[in-house]
Image 1 (cartoon, rainbow, N blue to C red):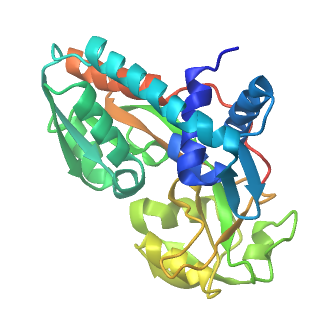
Image 2: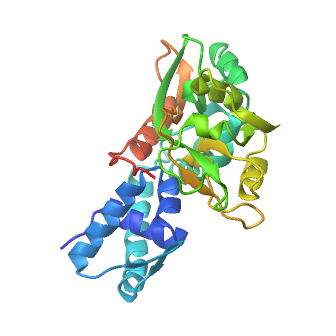
Length: 303
């Protein structure tokens, strides 16, 4: 009997998050991938490791016994990776432009991992707009952009996507649309809508709405404002899983639903000047993200 490192990593993430959905967001994988990993552990042990509850999971006695051992194994593997691949030998500097959403909801974990793994690699992170990132990539001021790759418009920019984050309808549990199946954009258009404007979200929204128009109640660059407006029942919105949290700052619940109409994922990845060979330091960063994020995933659940 043996567990894979991925199974243990997913198990620990669920134990720490208290929710499979929250763990999946932290790991940037589908909920079904996390569920399958946990079920694999339970099959091998012959016991459940989590007790399923209405709003999350809690550890069973078997799960509590496994957790410290799983953490110890992952810590040992992490130390070994840092020693063998972490590489004091990797030296140099990188200049990376990062868009707001990516910086706020995706990057911090990876900043820590990169600084631990490559202590002699100096990375200068700059929060910039997408247009500024494209311009500075082309004039050589930046080596990479870490951005919403679906927003890139200049053909001179090469891009590689590492994460696809599904967009869903957000609403309060008491909203008239909550619990309904097969919702379409036409249904959403009948209710006040909170339009996020940061990172060109409004432009992206208009693109997939087509001939329909949302009933815009408020336009804001604040994701937290959208979250609160939705949780309070003042509006609904469509945003990605990457920025989703089940509770507002006021502690009110937010529900989600997959729309029947096609809504594009939010895509995150690296961008650089087309035709520019990757330097050794650029290759290190590229390989880090590709090895960390490009892992096989099972199909996402319907809700």
